Length: 172
Image (cartoon, rainbow, N blue to C red):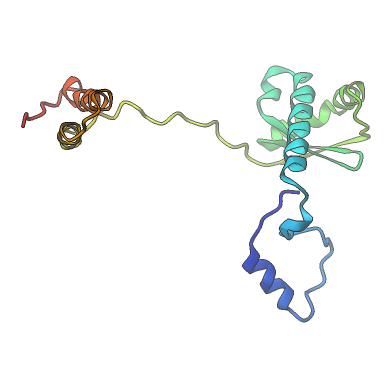
């Protein structure tokens, strides 16, 4: 479980006289002190990531890209699928997944698949945005006030980007 440190939320919960009864007491944020060290959380995340890679490697290519291993809870492997159709296809492969899990030393007796949209792939920011003429003028002015020749050259190099991008830069 990922811990969230909201001290004001935790303090508000502690001030209640009688918290409402919950079916699952492990839900919600935990105090940071109950979460364990960062190293242990990082180690667990790395283990889950390795298990994800190992289990998905056994799946056919289109399915492999549409599912993610989420967690190992008790003796149950929990996967997330991007749609109900992919979840059904993964459920059909339960025997193969359990055999692969046992082969790598994970004791699991069942597979649970939940439908949850996968996070989109990280997109690279657009780096083609040209430097404005005003920014180039300010960079040149800053370069004029710098005594260090190397740093001055870097500022002038940045200012020249506007000139090569098709923007004429006025000289001082």
